Image 1: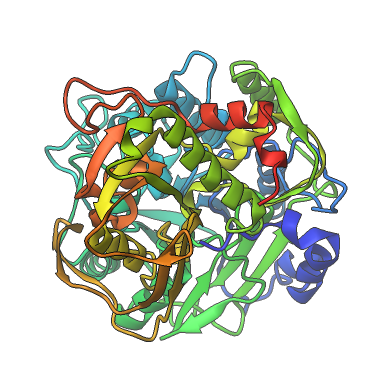
Image 2 (image 1 turned 180 degrees about the vertical axis):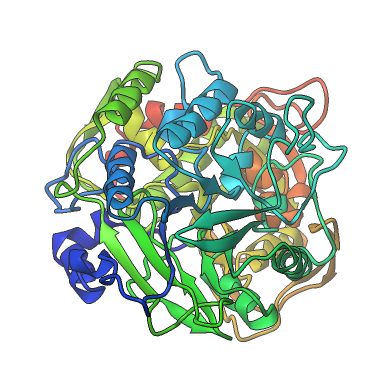
Length: 558
């Protein structure tokens, strides 16, 4: 996924975005007149990843200002004073991930419940599920949903009846969450529905929750038809699909007036119109709040395109903050894992490039830890490299020289992944690297960060194809041809030799579609088989990183 935020843009581009979109005055409603259309202002954020309070510090690299949920809350209150009854605040998914999910007591479910309750207190009206909501499984999502009373989650494309995320609940006549909703906004009967990316099946822990055979278009058509039948004058899809999938949705499904998107973290200073559908997205992590000012067509159905407006407003220190929401965030912070300095950084860590020096050193660390733990593999199938995925690197900033804290490492690697090893034939290793050449790999966690291994892809060649069950690969149907060069230790891969690589349990379980790793001989670092009972033991990746920083491994040149 493209991880662009206002911190990366810095001040000049943030100001440019505000100017390019019309500046603060662009959100003022037109002067009342007999001809003025009815209007509904949608305030939008997406992919906050629980970055409720902005950056812990602005770095000397000039990363700029990233916003906070307290400023977004105050902004909604201000817009409501201008337009009572004509403003909704929407969220595009990926809330339940990141710093505020790591409580000192380890209670992820309680952290998730309090996070969504914070959104409710901040005035959010509707949201959709993101893939990271499922990082700790559907039971955590269910627990968090049970804490909501007014804020409503909409997801139309889950087939969850009878599963651990069954929407029915005895004390909730409308269920824990819905597929769609009809709401009055500024005199417009507005229909809203949500869509979750089907890639959640392979990039998160969705458990027994299902998608249908046509996981996006069919439920979208059903939602549009249902909302129009209920009298919706304007229909808006609240999606966590990514920009390219939003474009495909607008192309394939008619009747959607606007899409408020998420998942690809795309800042869109200018909206796109595809097949008559307005497509918008507001970056990530509260760097911006989107403002989609809908104007009802004179016919009473659809948008008046000439009067509808979109802009992205920087959530910066020029925007007031709601003190009550700031107080709640401060209280949540008291329950988090305390900060501890674990070492020093002699050179900057540039996390805007996950495959750069930091990523390579992290992959090297994985290999070295595995070699030390399993010296018995040296004769039969030596540990020859480290293999990580770019989707596991979640901070996209530059860390300057200075102290390294456990919180720095957690911001970069928030998932509780463990280090394991996988022994593969040379062919299995090639199949693994071939999967890393998949289309859109950098957008959905398949891109690789390597040490000891090299690869080169030609994405114009045929991709690897799989037999799938419920969206999960179970068998390679045809090997791909995109991997045009690959080596181990500078030598070509021998298809008949055994190689062992250090990787993460997420990938070893087939995460991000890495079936070749799932089919390998997997072991924990205690030498016991991985994925069978009784459970084996391996260190958390974050623990191994802390130890490596303490020992100065990240100071060693590549």
